[in-house]
Image (cartoon, rainbow over all chains, first blue to last red; front, top):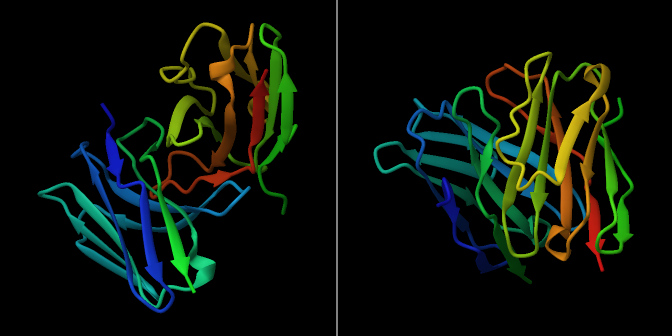
Length: 110
Length: 115
């Protein structure tokens, strides 16, 4: 089965907050990441969190990590139409390559 | 400086033909990754090169898939006897490697369509 799971779709209104959730299985992950993919483009690193932290804030972005439940979330405050994209969470487990989730498509309604 | 460059950006081929996809990583990046993104699916790991170490090929879906990285820089992903289920976007990424956190820089991908 998948190591990293996400819901596939989220729709919000412009100005609302968006919360994208992710669960992972590898408890040895040192860092957990959020990547953003805009249409027709590759992925770009949005933010990351060290596994010993439970929260990280970066402007409109807030990452919450519940290590006990292996649950990661990304909150986007004051969501804008430019935030419409696919958001991938990813975890790193030592020397192997990053494992990505299936991606959550965020649609922002004006 | 230049980012990760992939070519071609689009490739249409007939079932049974071989294809080669190219990736030029960011200069100085020792780690290179290939992922596949199918419609409605997430990113599927294919292969990972790190410096001079043996590549991690654990994600290659069949022996029709192979990849090489020459001189620690450019990489080529080859798919032999293509099948329709190989149709996907093939993404390449590079990173400084062995760093924490590991930040991947992605190319725009090659859209492969097998008819």
